[in-house]
Length: 207
Image (cartoon, rainbow, N blue to C red; front, side, top):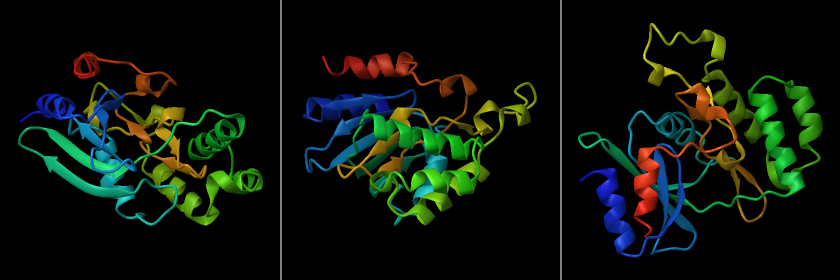
């Protein structure tokens, strides 16, 4: 079984595709409207690092997605994760709060500057101490662009920040949730999606 075949089988059974990225697709759950199923086709996907190093460690933090189940198939190179369903809001206040997340993790503003501004968005940040702790851990584990040497090392070992708006989602109450902060390639950092052959095939399963 491969990720492609699994997605094809599930869509035929009624699990509609609700999102596609470069390494994974999100499908509706037929069991609960409050869950989605994330299927990844590449075990080099940096979301796996986020899962093992952040999501498990900070499973009770408000800004980390709630994971209900996880399965990794090392033989066939894919993973399946059932997690809480989150929302993509684009209102002015949500976008401003997301900007603060990016600014802090990238080092553009200090902790004190972030706190001064974050208190203006209580609905989005909830527990400020938790949010800072998670952001600090992401920041510490991220690679700066000038530290990377693509000719000498495996590019998949790098963790570039990839905090575009679709990787910081929201719960229905407005609470921001960091869903996927890293990617291996710096060119994926733009606030756009690059749909590769994987994504094109996956979208084709909708038809």
